[in-house]
Image (cartoon, helix red, strand yellow):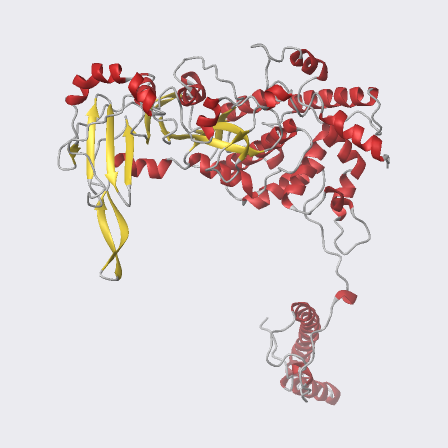
Length: 606
């Protein structure tokens, strides 16, 4: 093991972090006001009214649209809404996994559809180049080029560490301890694992340097270090599985506090600091269909704002088809987006904000704080229907899929006169559909977190690499579940680890008689059979041994009885033929018959 002095260790950390894990100090602090609005306040300046000044600036626009708004008034649930135009569902491919259920698909083969040998070969090439460059700079560690099979074993160990948690990486290789874990040392040496972790690289180091020279210019790509593998994973997610009709768009956080200029802060999320991903997921099972990483840039290709572009960039008509229903929260929903999606033959539904551009603001017959629970108000504007519903508080939903109210009801627990009882209230159709299908990304996040490979790293892009592993393993499990469904998530991960590491998952137990510890005795009794068994169940090992011994005794007895019967039968025939049989034969016949009759153990039927 290489040991460093204090100065060498400090230089190693500094060298590792430069050009790889940080950007310039200017980019570290490159948080614009719009960035803070997007994620700290979840506002989009392109479509949200941020302050009173913005309202004043848009006064002219409001005056121009006042005539239109005056014709749109809030209606109640008793008013009949028109049936919206139904978009015909025409998926581009057959729904579900694009694999034959008749074929055998192991966890490893499914995982390799996301992390193919070509992708891992590129990963190995770039990792070897990164290690060679580090050694050329004077860093001291032993290195041999990593191969494809070794990289798969490394990934298997990463998943093993996700299943078996300890406080430090070193603890996986502890020896001669009560808490030793023998498995990692049989797959890879500790120093080998650490050196691969230090140098794992998704892009070529020379190309990284070329990209770094463009820093500060529009040509600079902040995601350059993760782009090669990211595009491979995205393509695999879309090609291997075709989603069902209901989709969900939401944000996902990958925890990281590195000063990269891309890390964001979201106070409403469980993971507040990290990389922001916009994710498209299948609402039926949580499969991650596509994703994009927010880089902190403010140049949007359409000019309609981040929320608009985040949704439209994830929906590809050529890949998906038409007639899909997309659900989103109030950060994304805007009349402009829903109308454009409808023109693309995508239905959409989502909660919205009253201050969002082009949303109705007429207060006539609208809901108030004193409105009764279950009250409904709605406005139809072409394909759009704006619905307000009073639950414990006011809920606002916009949709191009459903009518305003079709008779659905919900049950709520209500306290009346110091007693709780269940009451039924009317509920708008868009609210019911939103509650049913919006949780696709949340379900995906939940599945990712069960056995996540995430842990502390020195390099920001390795956090993204570990997230790619999580996506590949979770999507592979969901596909396996669709095809066969005979494994739990835990069993799938255990078999995947065993196959990636090239070992057998089941090891035969090597228990001997010396391993058996008898149970504590109870008070002695005369019957030897009941010693240590009064008032408790029989020991499983003892029970098995007794059953084996009894089976042997029964077999021997059956054999003896069979021989005895055969001899008696022979003597009976001999005596019957010859009435003057010898006295010895008759006596033998009587003796054998008495022995057979006096047998204490029942004779099995022949």
